[in-house]
Each structure stands twice: as C-alpha cells, then as structure tokens.
Amino acid sequence: MIVFKNAEDLNQWCKTKKSMGFSVGFVPTMGALHNGHASLIDIARANHDYVVCSIFVNPTQFNEASDFEKYPISIEADKSILHQHDCDVVFIPDVQTVYPNGKEYKLDIELGEIAEVLEGAHRPGHFDGVIQVVKRLLEIVEPNLLYLGLKDYQQYLIIKKMVAHYQMPLEVVGCPIVREADGLAMSSRNRRLTEEERKTALNLSATLHAIENEKETHSPKAYAEIATEKLNAHPLVDVEYFSIVDAENLQEIDAWKEAKTARACVAAWVGKIRLIDNVSI
Ligand code: AMP
Image (tube, rainbow, N blue to C red; front, top):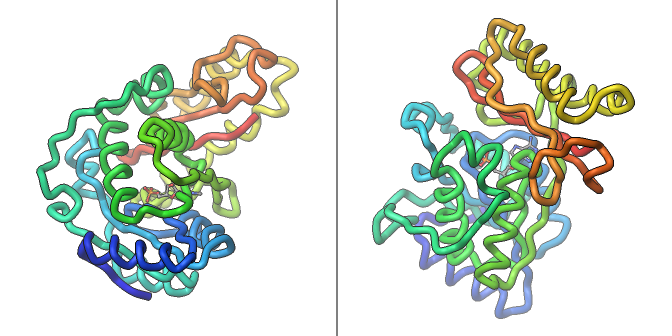
C-alpha cells in the first residue's frame, strides 16, 4: 500500500492511472477505522482497479473544539486494516496540505432545506466544513466513484447535491450501515463509551428498529415523541432529535404514506459522546 502525504504526488498518481484506462474508487474517512469503513473499502475494491482511502480529521467540520481534540487517532492500526482489505493507496495529509490557502471558506452553493434540519439544525457550520473538505479531497483524487456510508445519511444527500452542483465527473455511492452483532451502528466514537454507556447506546438502534412493528398503531410524529421520551428516561441519554422524515428531502412527515421511503434519524448524547443512527422505513 502506498502512503501519500503530499497532494500533488497523489493527484499525479491518480491522473496517471486514469490516463492508462484504470478506474479509481475513493473512500474518505477521519480514521479510527472499524468494520463500517472496511466495508466501504471492500465495496470499492470489488468495483475498481485502484482504491484510494484518505485519513484526515477535518478541523472545519467540528462545531465543538473538545470533540475535535478528543477525536480518536490510530494511524498504525488504520494502515493495517487498510492493508488487510487490499486498499492500494492511503492519503494522510496535514492541515496545511488540505488547506494551503487557509481554512476560511465561503460556501458558494445553496444547499436548501436538506441542510437546515437534523444535523444541520444542531451542528452549526458542520456541513460547510464537510463540503469544504470533500470538495478539496475530490479535486486531489479525481476518482471515478466516491463511496460514502449511509450511517451519515444527510451527509450523503448533501455531498450528492454538491457533486451535481459543481458538475464533478463522478458518481456517489451510498453503502449500507454496518452494525455490531447487537445492533449498535459502528462508529469511531463508540470506542470512547464506557461499558455502561455502550449498553445504554444500544437503545438507539433498538428504538429505530422497533418502528416497523409500530407503524399500524402510531403516526411518525407520535412514534418519534414516544421514542424520545423512552430514550430520555435513561439517565445517561439526552436526545437531540428523533425525526422521521421523507428520505428524499429530509422533511418530517405526518403520515407514513406521505413519503415513498421514510428515514428515521436519531442523534443523542450517551454520557459525553454524541451518537447518530438512522434506518430506512
Ligand atoms: P468518518 O470516518 O466517520 O468520517 O466516516 C467515513 C465514512 O465511513 C463515511 O462515509 C461514513 O458514513 C462511513 N461510515 C462510518 N461508520 C459507518 C458504518 N457503521 N457503516 C457504514 N459506513 C460507515
């Protein structure tokens, strides 16, 4: 596996491979890799001649300095996971390499309603930072396909919109959420949970998965209210939102039949860790 730290070198490498007719699949991450990330590498591996992964904890998408400072870092373990999954290239840039002209950024794209709800409503500036870094990484790698996890469903929709807006010549693929055996969505943040918090966190996915059996008896809004109340009854849990939305525009629905596909999304603090999860209904 080749390790690049320099943007120009990686750009040249990718350009050369593409000019020879090879395809490049790209998986951007913030490291602290787990099987969720590995599944994206595996999907890219099955579809491309070359797979590029990036590891960069992007400071501009954290709206809380302490969350950024405490973000887990495990580069050597990450490299070993990537190697095991047959990744060809890992890009590990520093902040200066990603932002040679400084981190200031003015969004010149109108994201509209999909960015104003859920994470957008609770993490001011988060998606500006996400767009800034993904746009820059895509300009460096210039992949044929970009692989994203549906764990960050809203991020997936927003990046798709950004790629269309800038008419970037690539496709965006959303990959299924990988869960622990007991249902907890895999996340780099899980490793910061205590044993008790880890057990409690399980209620998030359980509440999402219970929806299918409750559709006959509860409207989306009624279920969301009950679920919020149930989750908040655990002393370690503080729900930021539990919303059942139309999967296309992320607006809350009043009746199940209002949306072709609905998505139930939750964000909650479990102790000092903020977790998100979602399911398709
Ligand atoms: P992150 O390192 O958290 O920025 O995530 C990098 C990519 O991995 C994003 O596209 C995430 O949506 C995806 N990802 C993270 N966790 C999971 C998971 N449990 N299942 C599938 N994809 C995931």
